[in-house]
Amino acid sequence: MNELRVPIEVPSIENAPALIRPTAQSLTVAIPALNEEENIEVTIRTVLAAAAKVRGLKLELLVVDDGSTDGTAAIVDRLGQEFPEVRLLRNPQNIGLGASIRRAIREASSEKFLFIPGDNDIPSSALDLLVGNAHAADIVMVYFHNDECRGRKRYLMSTLFKLIYTTVFDLYIQYINGPAVYPVAQLRALDLRSTRFSIVAEINVKLLRQGLSFVEFSSNRQTGLVGSTSFTLRTLVETVRVFFQVLTDVFFRDRPRYAHRPQRLTYEVTLSRVGPPAAGMAPRA
View 1 (cartoon, rainbow, N blue to C red):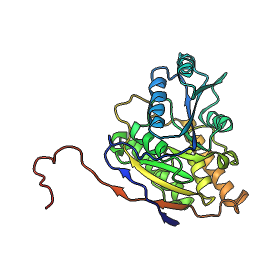
View 2: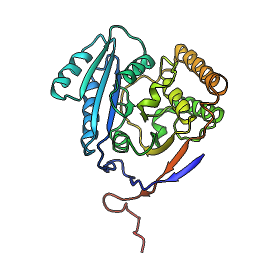
View 3: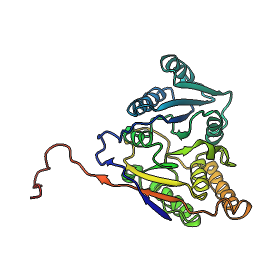
View 4: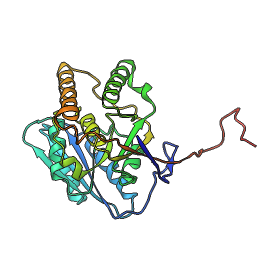
């Protein structure tokens, strides 16, 4: 895997501000949502706050209401009147996460594309890194340190999922299923097959195996949220189906297209400390 070092300074403290750099470039943030009336407003406002820190960034925020039966659409409509960046896309019936993301990709009018869940699951610090550095590489990725908050069972399933994908497809990345910023043109050229959350891994494999550049930033998971961690039979069937379809696409059906090595962009991390040293810790001489 090729490496190129770029001068990016990343804050090491959760509450430190993200890297802010002038840009006249554009970003579409898509938020698929199903019955998220309790979370959708804070999710939208978190994205708007992150984008406001990047001077000159042209933001488009697409909320894909995937057949909600609660007040999700009404909340987005109200916010759309307040913020011109916000636009509602309504699916008459539930078509699934993967199909909703594909619709948002078709509708996107920006150079780069990021999708996040509507349940406010992505912490503001991770959004600051993704939005603030959206144009630092072809693909801008985030991985999380505090996996202990997920529990033993979910951590095991996530680790096995990552191990299988990264080993089979020869990709040395920290989080195959994590949030990332993508180039819209390359996204639209993909033949995406996933209908559920496997679409994240499918996109990452198919773009990275085309030799695109990427950078990974670290953050911490959101904690204290109420959400589903169940792994259903339907999810398992989808996961297995998509894996073998991606395997077929990459190594057989379209092998020349996916025979390239991604280019990792590295960066220097500047450490800082907020507040006085902890008890018993003496500063270095």
